[in-house]
Every structure is written in C-alpha cells, then in structure tokens.
Length: 434
Image (cartoon, rainbow, N blue to C red; front, side, top):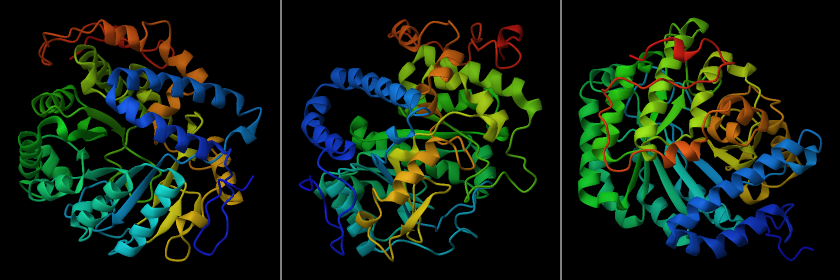
C-alpha cells in the first residue's frame, strides 16, 4: 500500500499511494509522452479522451463529491512581484507583495518536488519573470529534471534574454498583449514599449523559427472590445505565427484591478459590443483555426462570463493546479484556498493532505469567489454548458475541418453571418457585423 509514497522533507509521507490518480497519471505520462510527442496526430486525438473523461467525472461529482481529488498537472510559479511596466489593471510592481521574489534554493526545492510528484508543466511568471536574476538557472533545472517550463512575460526584455534561455531549454513563451501600438503603451503607462514587445517577438521568430512556441495572452476588456482591436491583434498573430489565447478581464484576482474608475470592467450595457467581438473572433477562427486557442464552444460563452461574473455557475477544474506566490504562498489557485508557505514547509508536505483534498472539492463546488479562470476548460467539461453553447450549431470539429487550408481571406473582409446561442441575450444575427 505504501510502496508509491514519497517522503517529505521531515520524513512525513503525503497522502499519496501507488494506486492514486496522481501516481497513475504520472506513470502514464512517462510512458506515453515520447509516443505522443513523436506523433502530433495521436496527441491531437488523445485530448478529446481526457476532455470526455473529465466530462463524466464532473457530471457525477455533484452526486458523488469524493470523486473530485487533488490531481495537480501544472504549477504556476510567481518568481517575482517586480515588474518593468505599470499596467492600469495590475498591482504587481506596486502594492501587491512589493519587492517579494522567490530565492533560488526555494525554487530548486520546489522543482525537485514537482519532479517527484509528476507535475510536469511549470509556468514561470510574475510580475515580470525576465527580471529574476536566477531565471536562467531555473529554466536549466527544469530541463535537467525533464519538466516542461513555460514563460509568461510582457516580452519587453525578450530580445535580450531569449538566446540564453533557449540554450537553457526554454521552448514555450506566452506574451501579455493588451492592445496594439499606442493603445498598448497607454495601458502599460510607458512610452514606446509596444515597439520593444514587437521587436522581441520578431527577433525570437526569426532566430529560432517555430522551434519556440509563442502565444499571445490577449485580454478582452472594455478598451480592447472592438472589431478593430481584434483585427489588429489577428494581423500580429498572422505575421509572427503567435496563436491568440482570449483572456477575460477579472473581478476577483487579488493582484488585478478594474481600473481607478472601473473603466476596464464591463457592464450589462456592453453585451452587444462583446457579442460582436466574439462573433468576429469565431469568424477568424473559421479561417485559421490554429490561430485562436479556445474552442468555438468556449468562445460562445464569453459574453455570459463577462456579464454574469460570479453568477456564472460552472464547476471549477482548479483541483489540477497549484499556485505559488512571490512571497512563498502556496494556494490551490490564484485567488484562494491557501495551503501553506514554502518558507515554512516544502511543497511535498503540502500536497494531498486533508486540506488539499477539501480545497479541491470546495473549488469544484464554487465555494469561493468564483472567478472565470480556465473558463474554456470548465465549459468543455460541463455537460449543461456544452448543450447551452452548442445549441444545435455545427460542432467545433466540423467547423475546423471545413475551414479553408490554402487561402486565408483578409480579416478586414466583412464578417459572415455570426453564430451565437439564442438563449444568451440579443441575437447577433439581428445585427450586422462591423
């Protein structure tokens, strides 16, 4: 029974046995990863299997809550609270954990524990992680342990840092994208920073080609909620082959704000504008599916997430996440469910405890502020949402299969008739696209 246990720093065995879902997943990952990585088609086919397995689990869980157990597959590590921008909607670099950053020994022990527990996906972010003096050493250690590091950055320093980071093993980068040109500079409250961001992306793509995966974390908020902003972002994505991930302006993250006068946040009156923007994103995805990360199903849910806020009741899948703050805080997610602090206890001693199990079930049941983190995964794994946002329209697979593969119409062309659920507000088909 205890054969599969891993001892923590003080010799205490976390509540994980050889037959636990975490250990089984870790073993399967080690066996299957080489096969799936060598055959992209198989990897693409494997994803729906995991989605539908979760769909069954999430459908049963309200009746059988104990089926939800901690199963961390990724960890978000806030290396530093320092930042070289002053974004309107962000408290990093100012009054959120001011000056805090994780030391190399703390991060090293954290990564060692991740390797032991089979937590392969390591997101390194901040603040601005490129400001952390030990970032290169951290990426090298991830590579040495066989972990998959993923850097979230504003990209301002990317041109100066990417060569060394590539040699250390970094292959995945996501870049915060808050508008184009002067709109970006206004949001980050610094001049000429958009030029530096683009220079970093251009250099990385020219230097390393597609060997480095770069994506854009585009934030949908009131200042970016326009057809022109969507098309400008799309043109950037086409030029540099950087798929767009649609993030939503938050209302509950402790390190984000809605702006001094809530100018970033939406109101019910904004629903028509949101729906028009979503329709345009869906249209663009039909042209080049690979350039929009979210499924059509998830995209259709966006207006409801933005307008309903915490009243959007879709079970949460953050039992698969661990979040680390720059001050060492360990939580189940960005917002809540604190488990401990790395300056007091190693990660190995915080995982799979009774507190971790309770936090996982509470998160799933939305006994929390109920943010919209991971909204796309939550929608796809929730039967009622799949029915609501599918609404009898052709499936995402059918839509992607029918997308043209050779010619790519200009995103400035007039949108085709938009598609949207009839039960989520005014029909988009009643309004012409911009």
